[in-house]
Length: 294
Image (cartoon, rainbow, N blue to C red; front, top):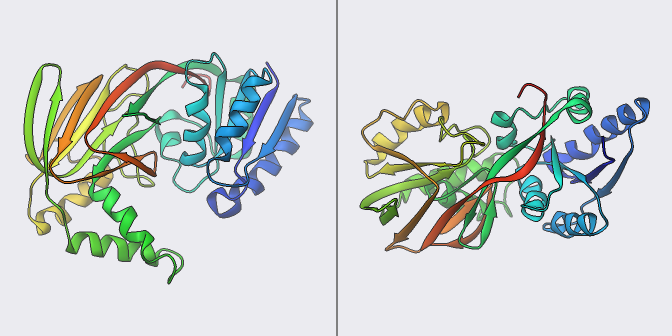
C-alpha cells in the first residue's frame, strides 16, 4: 500500500470532516499506516492541493468531505494514473450511496487499507468536470432560490423557502436533445445526466445508473402541471419514477442539449457553465479505491 495522502475539508458536514478525520488518524496510527494530511481553507482549495500532491509524486490521494470536495480532487486526478480514495464525511454524500464508500471511520479505514482499485467513469459538461450528476432545471432553480434566503435565515428554512419559491415559479424549458444520431424536442421541467444515481442529498433520480458501465443515464421530466409535479416528487426521491409517462429516459456516452431559456448547470452540487451544453463521458477515467467486494 502506497502512503495515503489526505485532502481534508474540515468544515464539511458542519464540522464532521474534522471530527471524523481525527478518529481516522488515530486508527491509522494504531495500524502503523503511512499517511499525510493537508486541510482546505476555502472553496476550490482542494484543486490546488491535489495538483501540488500529484506534482510531488503522491500515488494515492484521498478526498475527505462531501461531494464538492470529491469533485475538486477528482477533477485533478482524471487520467493521471493516481489512485483516489474517498472518505464521505460531508452532508449529502450522494456518490458514496452507490459507490459503497463507508462513512463510519473504522469501516472507512478498513476500506482504505484492504480495498481494491476499480476504474470509475466521470463526465464533462462543456469544459466543466463532474463525477456524479449534472443537469439543469428544477434542482438548479432550488439552489439559486435558496441562496436568496441564506443571509436572512439559518438551518433548513432557506432550503424550504427555496423549494416553495421554485414551485410557485415552476419553469418550463424548451429544449432540443441530440444523441446517437437522434434529435428530439421537449418542454421540460428538469434534466439530469447521471454517472451516479443520487443527487440532492439522497434523491434517487437515475436508479439504473452505473458508475462503471461507460454510459450516462439521462432523465428528462417532461411538461406537467404543478400538482402533478408535486405528486411525482416522492416517486422521484425514491427512484420509483422511471415508468411514469412524463419521464423520458435513455442511455448514451455523449449528448448535446440546447434550450430556448438560459440555464445554469448543476455539477455535483456546484453551479457553473450553462446551456447550450455537451455532455461527454470519460470512461474509466479514475482508478478509485473501493471496498473489497464492491
